[in-house]
Amino acid sequence: RSLRTARPGARIFGSVHQIRARRSDAPYEKPAPLAGIAISADGAGGKFETQTRADGSYEFADLPAGEYRLGVAVPPSLWGHEQPRTVK
Image 1 (cartoon, helix red, strand yellow):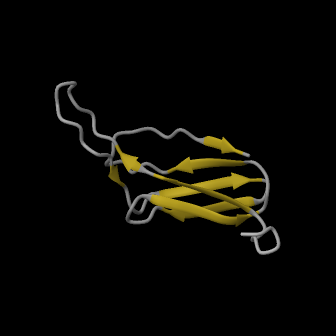
Image 2 (cartoon, one colour):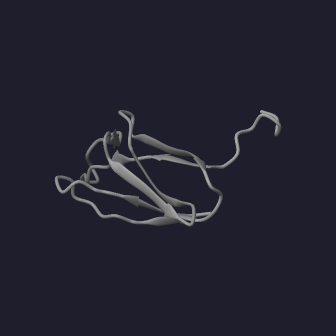
Image 3 (cartoon, one colour):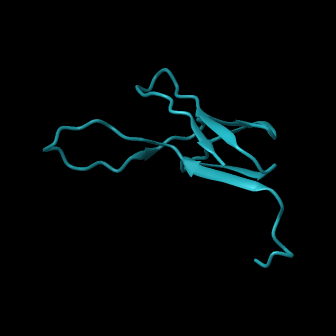
């Protein structure tokens, strides 16, 4: 795209997958995408929320420029932990 046709604003995107613990001699299992996981982006531009799609992907588009703290709501049925990230 040229700068004249580019949409204003920031974009944050990524994906959420489940990685299963395994023994060192077990065959590799491809991480499974997780659908319906709540993702939040909180910053000076406001708080935005979305959910992951069937392929585990998510996207925040047209955000006001700035710094955002990302959060993932890990369901109680999954063992895991939340690691908030800050993106600029």
